[in-house]
Image: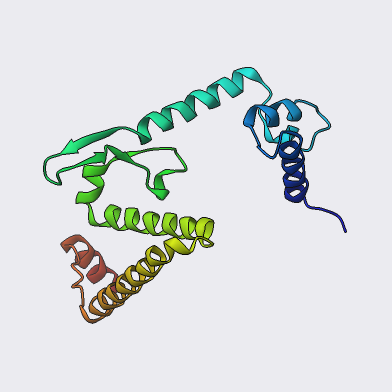
Length: 177
C-alpha cells in the first residue's frame, strides 16, 4: 500500500523524534529537512529572502495577536484587533471594539469562535476533565441555533416594501405606452 505525502511526513517526524529521545524539536526538523531527498524538504522555504519576508509577516501577526488593552466598559484586558475569517484572504485585522459594534461582524466573530471551539474539542476530546466545557459548548450551539431559526422565521414573515424611484416608474410607463 502506497503512503500519502502526509503519512510519509508524519513517519519522518516520528523518526526524528525517536532519534532525539522521543522529543521533536523544530531545529532538528529543519536540520533533517535541509537534505533535498528528505520528505520534509518541500515543506520549507529555502530561499532566505523569501523566508525572511514570511518570518517578518509571522512576527507582525504575533505582535497584532498579543496586543491587548484594558477596557473600562468591560473591566477586562481585551485583544485590540481580531481577524475575521472573511478578511483572512487579504490578511487583515479589525479593531475588536468596532467588530463588536457591527452586528454582522460580531456574528462572524462568534461563528469564528465556535469553529475555534470545535478545533479545540477535536484536539482535546480525549481529556475527560474537559467534558464539561464540551457539554456547555453544545448547549451554546443549540441556543444559538434556536435563535437563528427564530430570526429566519421572523424575516420570512416580514415583507420588505420595495421602493421604486420615480425615474424607474417613468421608464416603465414609457415602455408600456
